[in-house]
Image (tube, rainbow, N blue to C red; front, side, top):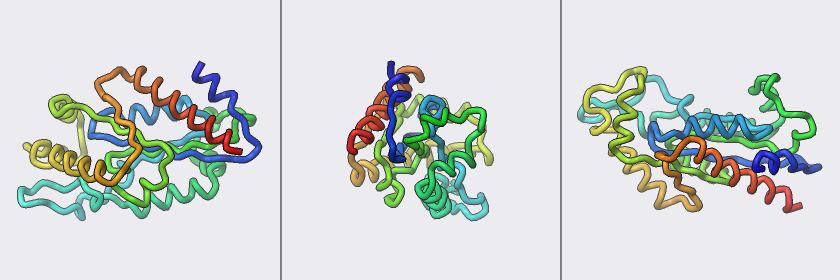
Length: 215
């Protein structure tokens, strides 16, 4: 029923929607963003993790931990340039970044959706101001720690990195976000992927419908 809702949305004027999927490391934000992209016509993803600076220029703290969980570790200007290119011409951007075999039918090419995914997307004001919808994935400390330990990173996490840097920075970044950003939908990352997708998918489709009805 929800999928039918999206497929029935039509408009003579091209419109655009920007959706932010943020959250704690290993909270499930990438999985949710990718699932949304597969379900929503004319959508594409920009992932914040693609804009990390080279390890050699990421500063270390007094314990020797690389400060990756900060905005200074990211090429945010470059990321914003990509977002800007989508805003200027989302249809062209979609053609350039989407596999033609997965392209939506021509009669669906009316609303374009950009899904921006990352752990600090709501902490960077110029980016945060662009979002029409904001979703934040959260999971408890013990679950996050366990999931993080099962992931392989390059460079790998040194001993004590999660407790000495990752989790403290997450708490600090989250506090800053909550003090400056409103209209965030918090999602329980312990729920099933299917349940999370269904809730967010329905919400985004309703936003698309509302966007069209403003004409």
